[in-house]
Image (cartoon, rainbow, N blue to C red; front, side, top):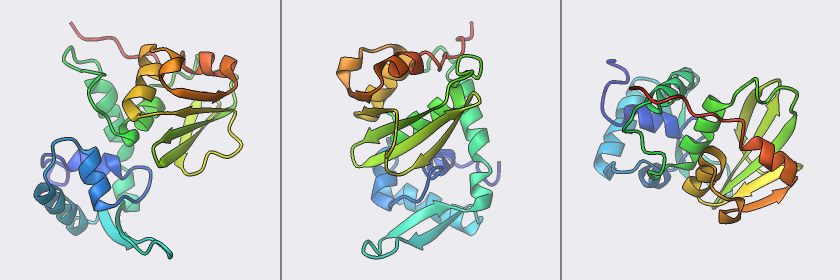
Length: 197
């Protein structure tokens, strides 16, 4: 808890789970955090060797923050905490979510039994950020990057895509391209855990 116990620390690490991010991206995607607090948490995480500063290669040459290998080891724990928190009667799935939290929830909630025998590449576009999720052997492996050669693609705001995949919103609320039979099966792969009480 000395490493992660400060408010916002876990959310900062979650946002770095799939690759480097700029300061303003982190500020935008962690709802409610101030710039001063974010700068303080990043500095603390750097001093604890969980996060480091890096520069993107040219032509970007922009400073970003990224989780260290040791920092990334905590990601499965963060995902498990998210699954545990989803059981809370106060959990509000309609609350604004970042693209990272949406992708992490898909990885955490996938049912190996429901995905049995399914092999597919699914692309996700959230504005200028994209991910490729590969389903194989009941697992969902994710990497950030271009969605080339995907069987299916979802495009929309994180909350809109989450509503379609996790809560049964209509496909027409977002842009869906590719194999629609696969899309219909894909949205059944993520049962939410039962609420307590």
